[in-house]
Image (tube, rainbow over all chains, first blue to last red; front, side):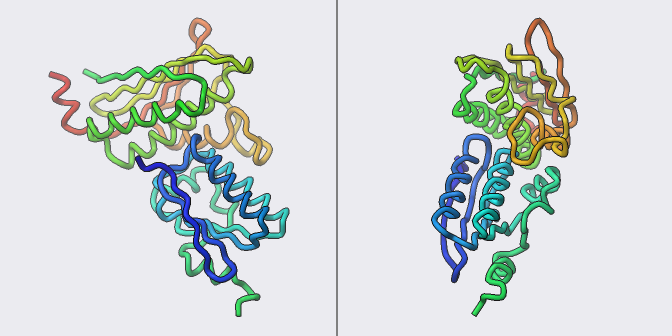
Length: 119
Length: 147
């Protein structure tokens, strides 16, 4: 119940990864695997939508940090959006709001990620 | 009277689901508020996964005990393990840890301290005993169980 699910859609050049459910020590490695797979496959703009996440633990933060570092190494951008309620609080508690590129909404993030290359 | 459930699990991360589901079931039974349940689930995952990952370094299978106790005004989570001595309460904060390096302590413990009202550790008879308590309103079911 409320197990993690990972969805994927695309908006222009941005790959949107939608996470829902719980992200804890049993499921964080799935996210790390999926994000590093996308980066390795050459994705240059990845947006992780956390709007449907119930909660996340430090294992999830670690996965997102590793993926962010990996993205930087491959000159790719990784951003997060839709941090609501408990999820935003947990980012605050971990002192992580400044560590990631965080956007309030998907629309705002897509504008930012599309950046100067937007047509 | 409190309502306690003991769960014995292996030092295998796949057993984490057993304690998580037990807490969910108790939350439904005793109508623990969603916000408190979420905070308890995060704290439980942090502390139990630390024990699974770091308490034993011999690569062998070990078992340890997780006790969840629903009190009329709070929920207690206790972990008893016979692994190496480790006091999570006095562990270093994440600022002192190399970024991205998993190790005992670190960010997870920092988060636990913000989520629960009491976080205590004792080493008793060669066992680690870690206690987390979260004050919250517990629903009517616990009152019935008191009779």
